[in-house]
Length: 267
Image: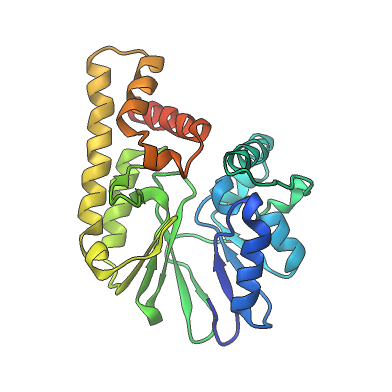
């Protein structure tokens, strides 16, 4: 996003895509520097390439919440970034450069709900939208009537199905959906999809709520059947791990997310 004074990028993608993504961003910047990298949340497929972006644009400032900043400094998430990045690259038959310094995963600017970052002629309103993770952020650019969603509301798949993606809290997910749907947007940008047509955007939040509620009730139904954790994960896989989804998400990541969704619901 090109403001009169500052430029911004929303997420920077996976490690094995870093070179191509940087080339695309460089082309879009047309000679300007990259000033902000807004992180929707701290997962490898959204910010795994951060070290390479820092190398290319050392002055760029990474933006996240206080919770996100704390996660970035922990050893376990940093290890998972490497492991899942390698798995994703292998699944695509791509090379994966893991020679980066883990210390590149850090926050430069901490934001909270409703904070506004001016870009000059454009501004970014921060919306805390937890549910997928506790540090999830969505963004509203009022001058463009553009709403950029994180994964909390779900992930729209090519077959039109919205995959529910709450990992930390179904209740937070519902509140986040309601917070976003009241924004006066004209353009809706979805995670892993980008800007969608008016036909999709107009009905998106109703469908997202239905998908997430259905998943929540599915987990509760498994609990009523006294299924143990392994049985629940197996049943969840059969219900939600479509061929379409697994083209985009490694099975290891799916299973980790399934376990998180189940455990957060049972709590």
